[in-house]
Image (cartoon, rainbow, N blue to C red; front, side, top):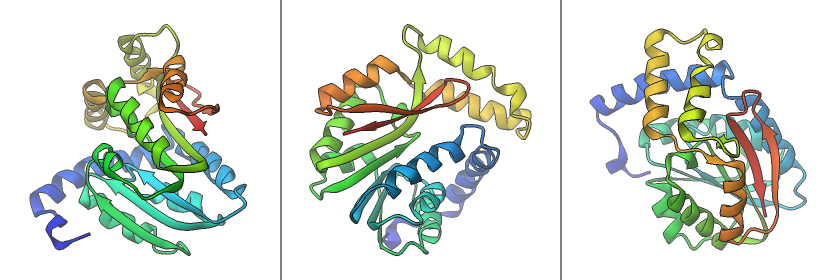
Length: 235
């Protein structure tokens, strides 16, 4: 990262406020981060040769750093819009036995202009912020940069077939009693974000988007207990 990407004090304060709420969510495993990143690790550990790993919307990369331990990762590249998160990512990735590169920017734009190949692309809870046409463009760009035999994996908000966004949001709200580590203010902040920014696709939508992007093999690796999120592998 360059010095021009260093955030000012006001930006850092706002970032830390939201990041605290996010960290509670991860630490309490509200969205099944432990199970998902265990699946990611197991899949990566099965790869026979060294691989180049592209982390799309990487955030602080804390969970990915753990998932990559004990694998044959040869190069890690992370993209995120928040330079503050990448400051933390640099620390969290420091013990990986590979070269690490971090890029500040919009991941959709970065992927559209990317020419460097990747063996594995990971998207963890970032793609659902885009509408369907934008998701399709991202998947096409990922397919373009993946090497033959390469793998895309992602964990994203997913509606049941036949379920509307409003119905999915109503089921999201049912989680409140279980999220006991959140204050009412924390929950409201998260709920407002989800209602404003989350656009989950259905299970069938993901399969159609994958086919349109050129993927031929789609596997469902994990379904969250509340059936609000699903993990896929595409090749």
